[in-house]
Image (cartoon, rainbow, N blue to C red):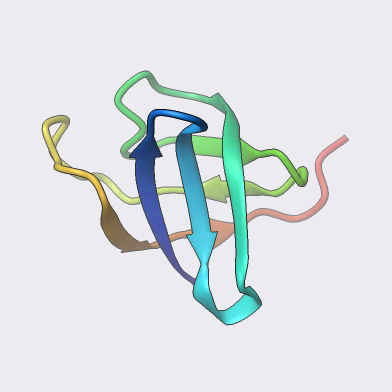
Length: 71
């Protein structure tokens, strides 16, 4: 699914899913630089992000894969 990742001073990192009109903060990340690992957003979804350069500028739209229910 296409998601936009951005950073804001109030929230920090957040993910926007246009098809669901959903914006949630990132609450946990596998990797400090995000790319190539998973992130967990506040609603509990876990998204796998593509490999990208560590210095990729935000905001950016990427194809992320939603994992099945965890735990």
